[in-house]
Amino acid sequence: MGEISEALRRARGDDPARKAQAAEPRPIDPGRPASPAPPPTPAGERIESPPRTREGIWSPRALFVEDHGPAAESARHLALRLRAELERRRARSVAVVSALHSEGKTTVAGNLAFALCSLTPGRSVALIDCDLRRPTLAKALGIDVRVGIDDVIAGDAALADARISFDTPPLDVYLVRKPRAAAHELLVRPSLDATIRELERLYTHVVFDTAPILLVPDTPILLERLSACVAVARAGHSRTKAFHRMCELVPAGKMVGAVLDEGRLPAAAESYRYYEQ
Image (cartoon, rainbow, N blue to C red; front, side, top):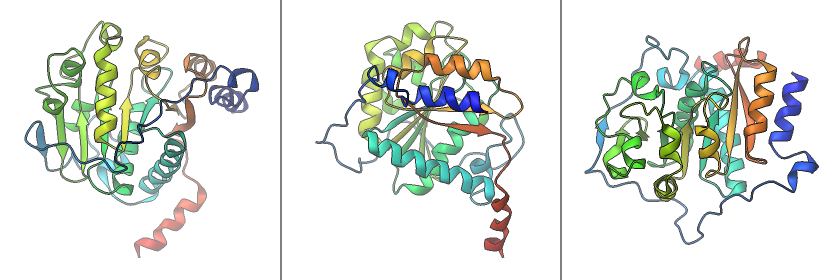
């Protein structure tokens, strides 16, 4: 764990040798309202709520299943800390990243978005599936995507047409319609910058699920355009060497923290039962 902590410290920009190279976060336009107005409702699709079941490919999604309990409250603690860091950086977007696949990145991204919804008034949180090669959010949510965020970046659709809005919680999601084998060719287009700017104009917090960093160049391309990311490692699964290599590929100063997926909850979590009585 000490080696992972050291890699994380360097990726966060705490190393003096790298601080000088750290990219400046993209400032938020001071002319924009503090609480952006929700997107117009006519375009896109509305769904009452996501599946409330532990069955299927995404069984650990605590906040997709329940609104309370130790795991859900841990996710809210994470959301609170992340929200404070984003405010400090004057940033609205965050990418959830991992070195390889099956490390819990999509689970953390989804739970983080749901937790932010419960801590932020109004419809001000968006969840974006930016793993354009092997998207999983649509299948996890049981949604047949008609217009995807991939169509928006390709210039074939407007952002509003790709929006899928849940009534409970008030979360907007932007999913992938079809896998894109050459996703990096889409992500280097100027349309990606325009899409990110529009999302940041519409929402207070934008959470991006991403492709594994060590397997394809897609996520490093995306991170050049965002101010922050959170790394995910999976207990008993992730390897220290892979985590180190991932940290080396993250632009200096953009990693704000790490999450251990499927790790043991703190012993004090058992005391939560007191509040259920």
